[in-house]
Length: 186
Ligand SMILES: CC(C)(COP(=O)(O)OP(=O)(O)OC[C@H]1O[C@@H](n2cnc3c(N)ncnc32)[C@H](O)[C@@H]1OP(=O)(O)O)[C@@H](O)C(=O)NCCC(=O)NCCS
Image 1 (cartoon, helix red, strand yellow):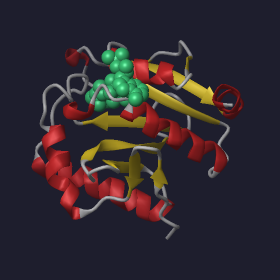
Image 2 (spheres, rainbow, N blue to C red):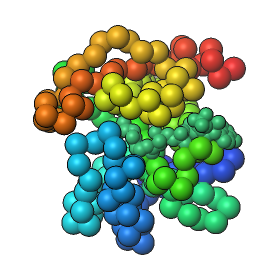
Image 3 (cartoon, rainbow, N blue to C red):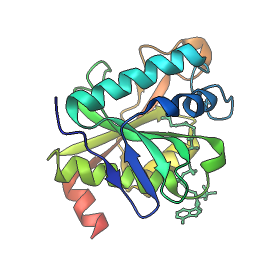
């Protein structure tokens, strides 16, 4: 068991999962617009399994894909966080990732939350590098990576668990080193 970390930004809180998050999380995962660049949407049962998995990882490691809520009203806006990846052809690394409900796009929330995750990754976890991945055509997600000053490594790869027929198989790999993060945030 680890200390369960919670992050706070001017407008957001990143925290451990609670049972009350499930309905909003399931709505987000069932939304075609949110899931445009995923092979499929998820039903309630699948959403429950994901939420429980994320909760367990946070419980065990102290960090992970956190629920992101708005401080002002406690609204569930989605998930943003860090995740260890060791089952993709990109080596053993930690990724930063995000998925927000559509009502909360266009406010800078994903970038604000992800920046707090990078700060945590470099300051608390003492990582040397954090990566981000997405399918090549996911422009909104790539724009978040750009806003975070992450660099497109050019090392595109085929996601082993994504079917060719979806057209989503080819992924980009963005990276940011601790050194670059410190340079670009100060
Ligand atoms: C990817 C995703 C998180 C991007 O969300 P987003 O709201 O566009 O990203 P940001 O939080 O960086 O917000 C930036 C936008 O907020 C606007 N904005 C408004 N107020 C702002 C503020 N105070 N500060 C910063 N930006 C602000 C910016 O102008 C920008 O708008 P623009 O893209 O029209 O220029 C969202 O599209 C999403 O959840 N998609 C579905 C899930 C997904 O694909 N996840 C990635 C899988 S790898």
